[in-house]
Length: 74
Image 1: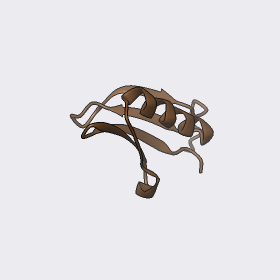
Image 2 (image 1 turned 45 degrees about the vertical axis):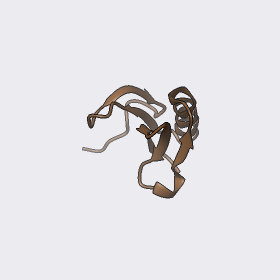
Image 3 (image 1 turned 90 degrees about the horizontal axis):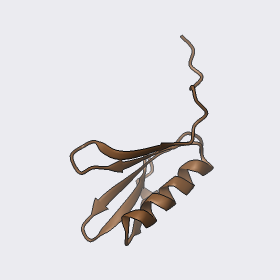
């Protein structure tokens, strides 16, 4: 599991951490801070990125645990 992206999203009275491409790995949390900490820990473990959803299709916070710059072949 390398380079996964995680989204922290408000859901009703709580918050969800959603792992891109793996909906069965979604976890629920009571607070935004708790969800943000969990998402960051999971992203750190697999060298991914974390986005805090702003409710309008974008994000209001971001963290990256990838090695930058990304290795790309042109």
